[in-house]
Length: 256
Ligand code: NAD
View 1: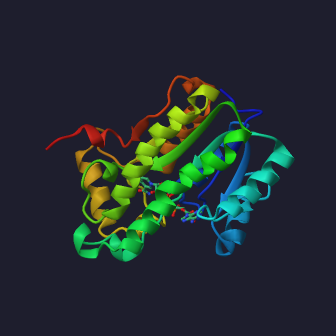
View 2: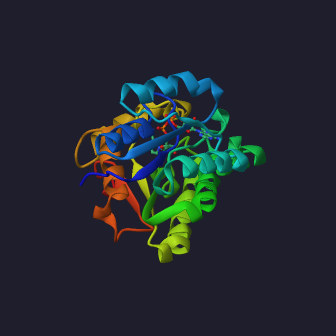
């Protein structure tokens, strides 16, 4: 199914390894009008080059998702130029590096807890709230989660708790927006070596464990996630909402 005539906002591109970069690429190839946002000035030139390289001609938006005024400004500009959205990809997360190491209770601080939740969970709700009147019927909102939301993953710590909040938000948002036929889902991805992942202590060990333990004895790629994102943003998934779909080569089903 092509995505022609769909306006889709993709947040969270920081490098060519970003999961959202692969998503933007596949959506653009499928004919969607892809609008991209990045966090701050530091990323501007890189994101312009990356999007140009894959044939996206729309100028990317600079938008810190913790700043509602920046989201509002981006929304006004998008609506003026392109009209309402058919999809939003939320692909942003952050926790202070020192909290992604050791035992949760040894390193957690109130500030770290609040920052992790503000960036990694609330920003999805914030996007939904600010764009709610500018979403077309059958629009689809997706976010990215990780198994650390539901199971203890060493060093993932406060980020796991923020992802649990994010996954619960998916359900409440799905209920809030369902009467407009708008769907909200999360993809729980297996580990992928990106900038965000490099902040988690022992990440290489996690990759090794997935490769050995998952039914499909391999790690996943950003392209694997992008293909599922494509499905969730398309009209092939119109009866799916409030879900967290695992894209992890089956790792989550395994016990010992
Ligand atoms: P990434 O570092 O490429 O992307 C993270 C993005 O979050 C960056 O673009 C960064 O600029 C953005 N961001 C952080 N704070 C922001 C803010 N205040 N405003 C706007 N943007 C902000 O890494 P990634 O792995 O592609 O991460 C994307 C998403 O996927 C994250 O939610 C991450 O938790 C999730 N995820 C990653 C993995 C993995 O192993 N890489 C696995 C499961 C889920």
